[in-house]
Length: 393
Image 1 (spheres, one colour):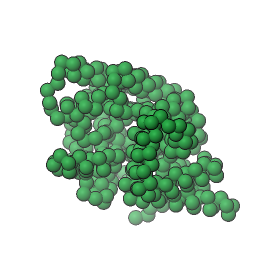
Image 2 (cartoon, helix red, strand yellow):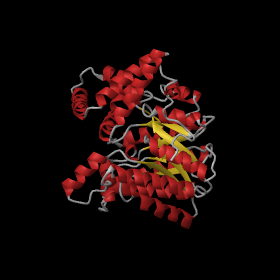
Image 3 (cartoon, one colour):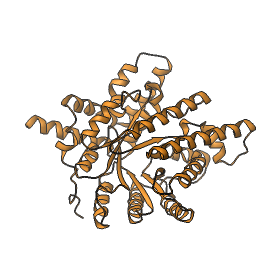
């Protein structure tokens, strides 16, 4: 297979064109630390403890890991990141990364913030996307209870109705403004109500094109079958399936809970199985692109290469408005920038939010970079190569 036929991810002068030497050196430090699981474990524990004791560590966090992986604390802060990406024909998703809210006041505040991201995206001249997590709008415990099919109290039923109203309000605005909306997947033991909300929204708003996107976490062994089943459901019910494909972000937690509670581990037995199903899912979506909108979220070079080859084999154009590549802000710039340079539709998730509220997201990024084989090492080696190249030039 010719993996450099359409795009070459080794072109680091393109990948890091937007970064100064100082910014690259900061990345070098962060990813050097993330190479070691024990350092990540100690660092996250110390972060939680320091914030709990109200120690003055926020400045340090903000100038290091927050600066790498987040666009800012509010939408205005994100302007610089979005403008920088836009110069290289990369779109930005402003992702309000606050989750696990506990109060109705908090849920309403998050809902209003998500609505603002949709308004902001609607002003974009290029790629219009927004994203949110249901756990920003609903109690995790309530979602878990619904997933377990337990009876709700009168108060809980009222709370669930408010959750449904929030989701519909968000999805309706996205449809009105023509902004594609990604509903993130979460832990498997709260996923059923998220499925219900996502499918209902797709049935309502995806009549002509994919506006609402359901997220398939391909590190779950049931996901490839779920994708095909949901595609059939979409055909049977007259809507376009919006499919966001990712490998997933809760692997360690999922395995620990399955072992502790004695049920079947929902996670694939190994990385090769996840890769196989992810690539099969992407190919399936491309083969059925007249009925599916595809957002392929991956930091895996081989998977992105294979998609460029499949796009060509199927006679699609790199600029096809039904196909998007996506990576997280602060990660895999060698993939994002080189894909965009090759003319493909590329989006970066740009998380933002108050520093303390984004800590769960930042911890997940740190843990993901240690649990995904070679991720931090790969990021580190690319930064080192680019710094070396710049010293020679």
